Image (cartoon, rainbow, N blue to C red; front, side, top):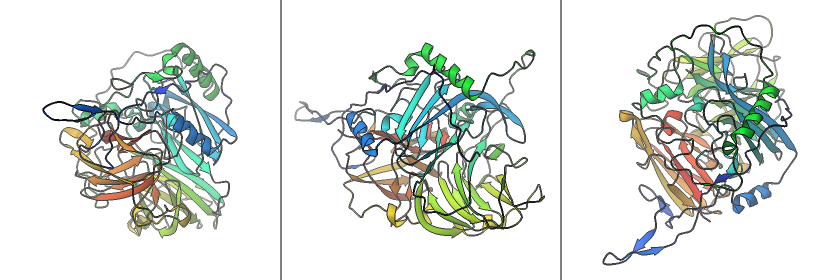
Length: 568
């Protein structure tokens, strides 16, 4: 990875999408404890006798671009503006073992690193050169709701040939990342690290590395994520069209870029010239070849005790570290004795990774951007969407950074080298089978622990569904953005997650971090094993409409998503 992101000057023709957001004013439900069918489904309270109904109005929800959201952003302040641009485009990617045709941000896998300092104003233009609508979700970061990138909920989708300007204050330091929230696009090459540096960094280290892990199938043997989703759910495709129908209300405020394709197309061209440059024609087009029939990618025979049995749904042909297979891994160089900070991001669609640095002990300092009481370990379990920061003191030699696809029998790898030549192949590091930490065993650092307080509201979310028919849901209901769990600003909210399925699920809350029980780590994504439950607390201090979902992209797109909504 690049140590620092490139600064790009936006092309003059870029069309901004403005603040055209979705109307989100809908009725709410008064109870403080919700679960099962107790969520608000935008109905009305009715009471009476003899069939006579008395209709009582209910409070409305905060809109993604409402005054409450703007007030919260003003409180975060506005620092120096740091500008970036991403071009989502079809491209050819070199994975090391082979080249594939896929979608990515520019020609890079992962996409260019976005690096700012806490307090900066981050301004990024996403230009869409894809053949379908897309979006950009800022995973893990606490930001204004209208910039969250959830199409059909917080913004209109960014149409093909359109562009959208994201702009918000990056108030909290940490390791984050960006990816689409449109269909199964995440399982292509559309992801990039987002690093928010701490201006008062308390850690001391000589070097910093960012390692993004991924599972890969796009463009291999005719496979695409969309075809895999249809194989898993019997051809139904996604449970909801993220392009905005049928649930998207009329926009509020100025028109979006999706509604101005002519201007937006010029914006895409400007970004394309800036980021990629003009490419020369590569000879004459040959005779069209028949598309290969995709092979089955359904996982059979995998097992993991750590994950409670079945490790996932999909058997991937490759597992990547910074876009490279183990056949041609990225090499990190250091001097013996260097103290190195490694930021680990799991951008996979269906795979948890067990990670270890051969010959070294790691000290965990952060998870999901928040500091923890430092903990030493040989290995870590990293679910989809999770991030961990670790410190290592480098020994002399050549060592593998191994990321085992948990329960799937294959690995991703990078290499640490202090000098000289070393082996191209490595035995399995014994650290993979040594002391292993999960998030449940970490404690939040004192400065980020929630102040002890009884919850004002408890919400129960039961993960439901099964591999049979591939129907996934929360509280028995597949995703519908019109159904919301109400909270009020200022409340301490307790969410109890119950896994009633035979699969593990990494659950993710947008726009907030929650505290694991008993002084546990502050997280935005955490693993829930089959047949277990966990209660997490968070402060409702970021108004808007926020998604909660499983971060297995095939589970979420088959219905395992819902919405947390702030009442006005």
